[in-house]
Length: 76
Image (cartoon, rainbow, N blue to C red; front, side, top):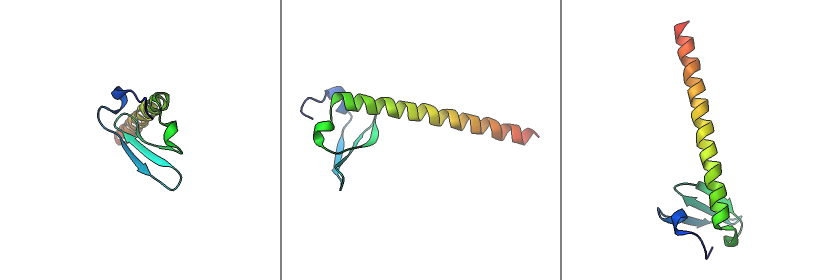
């Protein structure tokens, strides 16, 4: 955790203790869990950012498909 790049936490970071370890929150990653603070590395944060971006893309696509389907149903 000592060498976290400032760009990853410039907007803030929250770390909460849980029974299983820690729950981390940053704006780009949203929430993710770690067992030990040593897991909080630049690489882990970058991996979590990628996961969040994929989640947002997938969610947007599902919403788009749902919206299109609803529009088709209204035309029938």
